[in-house]
Length: 178
Image (cartoon, one colour):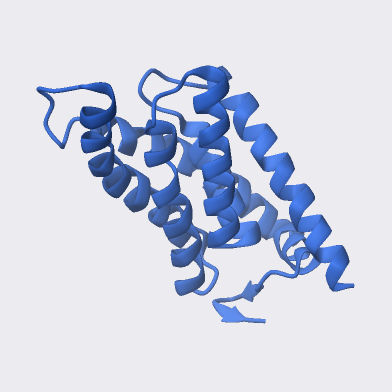
């Protein structure tokens, strides 16, 4: 039974990675990638912070190698993915906790970390460390809003709890571990 859950988690992870790579250039606003934040939050809620980190990292690496995206694909995703999962757990299953984690992790931490990375690797000088913050926060607000609506709909219908149970992930109900 546990082996089935592991296989199911890997299949879902692969599907989220594929979806993230495919929709990121299609639904992209210059300087923002709101669909990456949608995938981060959904993965964090469905599978936890470490799967979300792996998902964000692999999507970023694939986007960087295939699409020529700068390292912002990594710095703008990994912190939010982990923090989204951690705050979801810390808030005992509140979806807004996952969204706030993504906003803080990507919108602030990821944006600030992106500045030295872009300066060192791409020679982008003359920018302040706050240059990326407005774009990253805007992207996380768009993607986070979509993820919140999607996950709330899944939660209201009971589908979210069912997915989490089938994946063998910690399920929260009414703010309590189940």
